[in-house]
Amino acid sequence: MNPRRKMWIFHGANSSVRLSSTWTQWCLRYAAVLSLLCSPVRTDDACPYSCVCARDSGTVTCRDGEDTEVPGDIPEWTSSLILRGRNISTLQRGAFMSNGSELDMTILSLSYNGIQAIEPYAFLGLPRLRLLDLSHNQLELISSRAFHGLPDLRSLYLNNSVLPSAAAQLSEALDTQTLQNLHRLELAGNRLRSIPMLRLDIYNLHALVLVNNSIESIGWENVTNLYQQTRLRVYLALNPFRCNCGLEAFYYWLKNSSQCADSGHLLCSEPEAKRGVPVEMLRGDDVDCMNENLEAVSYVFLGLVLALIGLVFLMVLYLNRGGIKRWLNNIRDACRDQMEVYHYRYEQDSDPRLANVAV
Image (cartoon, rainbow, N blue to C red; front, side):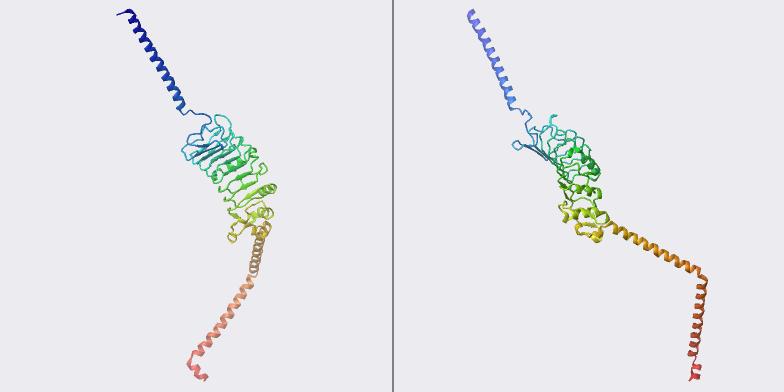
């Protein structure tokens, strides 16, 4: 074969191999770019899995899932987060800190999630939160620092959430300077027996909802606090008030103040004679501790007088027992003589022979 022809064939083969290699590289690069474009790359602004996002309004809604924790990929643009129907049993420390950074969230709704415990600093990272809804959960453990880190909180809803075992813990959790800007507090349907705040002057409350609890009376200390908070409106309907002396301070506050917005719906449950009577329709004598105490004292005094009279009577009987005995004997003898006379006359009247003689 011609040497030139051999060289041409050799160079042609090399060029075809080189062309094939270049084509393969281009195909691989195109495939890599295509895969990057089509792959679901996660960004900070993406919507969390199983949630619905509306970026225009800044709302993220996550409903009816089996997740046991708060989503950890909440977008930074979120202003309203609604978690409902999940299985979040515990709110852990910093549960809402997205990648360790704070969020500009202002509304957080966590109702119907079966939450049982709130750990310390659970809402850390939400310094601008204004509304927190924890209604319809099953809170058994509330840390005393549960609501720390919420300086701008205005509304706190805990309706039908606090179990009796956590009532005392709730009082400690609310007794914090962190909530000094709180305007509205709702605690309806929690079987509370008293107002769970020892002081009301540390808040900026405008509305306190205590409807449908187990409050029987409100003592002097709480009434004094209510007198001082003139801007506060209290809602107390559907509570079993015990209308006795212990209700005196609250009764006069109710009559002299317009702070109870539903005062016409406050009814007595005890005593039986006053059941169903509106508290504001009671008379002053019904809750007057002085009259009630005087009445009790009068009964005691009457009992002592009767006991003294009885004792004097027994002493008189004892000292005159001899004369009384003679008197009783004389009465017995007189009765006996009289009975003998009656008996004798009866025998004569019953004898027919004496009857004929008489005729």
